[in-house]
Length: 345
Image (cartoon, rainbow, N blue to C red; front, side, top):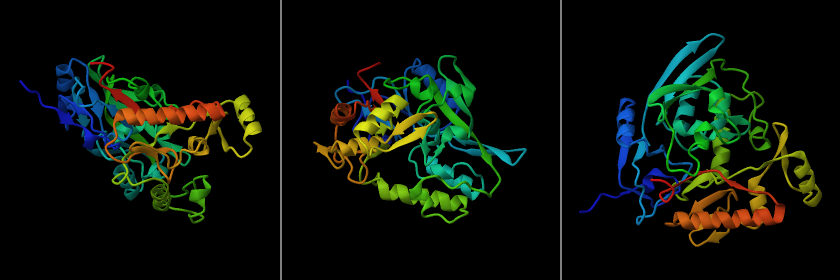
């Protein structure tokens, strides 16, 4: 007897051939409880697959079911003091949602325009760009708690947001299982369509007028991203493959003494390094290994040039990490979540 095998290539932006035996599309919240119950609480949840590495070759497909989150819908609740609460379904496209907020003259997400992925993925890794993090405007996350078998509202505080992380990512990292299915996200946005803060990044400031509108900021950010980052349709990738390392003052001083031109930024009482600069300094910008490589436009973007395997991608990533560690004594961390069929079933 043969069993169906589903290829997840179109459900991950790295374009990896990864396989599963059971694939379900979630379009209604009421279906979540039934699907989870039938899966015996063991499953994989994907949105647009923009921040995952799917490690499940055809000879070892995911045994647990894979759910694709396609929950849609946007609702608005007015609040006093020129604030609005916008609830958005987890399956909505992130960039389309950002543009929707701007068209409706809601301020707060303009610096996060152009980031690939779904709305439900945004709180998982606490996406950020040009001085903004999504946790700054998230009111709460509406999710299905697998362990308690009920839908819950998780406050901003209880999401335990950190730099490119959250309670959701901490519980799914390097595991094929999830404790939450994000159903929707509530954002607290400003209805004051004036006094936009210009991002404190030279690349953005230099192309903006003195008092930019939200549309002008979003357009500038998107244009910069297009120039710096490869086109997903031509070069499958997950955006930034490594997290910018955060270090203490002692280590920052040691690095400055050895590498006078190393860029180091202050960050919440600590210091943040540029992972792209570290990688480029080790000679990996544009470097290739089999059909994998760091793109010429941006040393932080690992690209699947042609039908690479997850094994090749992870081997190349280890080469990059080892080189940075040897030269700078800095440990790079992979940003996307690795979901492997060999870990749990």
